[in-house]
Length: 256
Length: 259
Image (tube, rainbow over the protein chains, first blue to last red):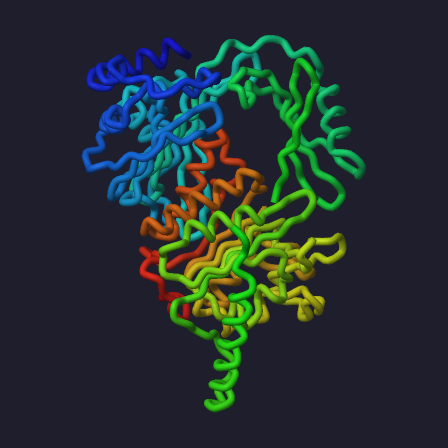
């Protein structure tokens, strides 16, 4: 993953030059949350996607496992990782769907998404993306996604492209990837994780709906292997419990 | 920042008295009321297992400077939220809360005690709304049509509730097609907190920056996805809107649907 990122950065000569000339602005304990990139370098990173309009920069701001700059132009917005220059989001208001019409096939949307990624020199897994048609009511969205797993473990290696189903234009891009080590073997089983999750949720008639093994990061930026358990109770309340796959410690995320 | 409760209530009493007098003099049927500047009500509740008051506060904060008279409404009932001093006088109406298909939930007391909850139902066909502090969108075919932006920020609010129950119907569809709200949005999946707090910030930021409402609602979901490395349901927005509508400059919505 680190090598892939390095290739990406080196692929954009201007960005690379600015990146390596960048001034270290701050340091934290989280290796993902270093600020090595200047604001002007963040703009250069977005230029690699063919964006030509004037952009203003704010931040960096803190996200899970990252610090990022926020960039805004008349029609384009972007988030750029303040450490390694990865363009994490890119959205366009001028190509956003204005109708629920679908005039582009799913297969064509996959081609458009792949071409967009290739044009920006972003490495993706060899497999074709999965494409979903999302119904937003008065508009729809083709969401093409690349999500990697290693030995069945969901890893932070994800990219997506949003395609306008009426015009074929790209209006959104995300790259949620983070550097990670190949995940090991969990110390507790899936069944044990399910039991811990239900015990954490306390009294009631909670039932586990799904369990997935994922690479996650704690607040200090340390990589963890976690069982992520979704559960519901008799009143149809739903919760997600994240169980550390080595220690069994658990935390709950509430739904609305 | 504390909610603007006391001046809010006082102003509303005066405004209500004026509007009641105007109604008596004109002998017109009840309808939406418009004020200058236009009103924006943001609702949140503090359940023990989910506190959405911070979400309401964040959106309230982000709308500063947009020209609306903003109100942060915490732990008020569904019936109050739909009342003449709230939804029926609003240009912007947003609720963050527990929800399901065809309903969104409120607390009725400042401490959000157990058994003091109330529900706003879609209720497109089954008559009574249960009375008391509950309410139904289907009750307001002619008094919400001045709302420009309405958001049901809770789980599954963009999906149809169970036929034959008070949840029958779709909050978003009903608000747009029956109540004639200009721009209305919900979500088709479970949505989670504290991610919802960031959604509120991102939505308010985008709206205040002058983006169209449809783009703002969608883009806020993308920002949650990046911030949390997962959208946590906030990318499943579902809505009806007038193309190119923005909340800027501050104004009420247009009457009637579609444009």
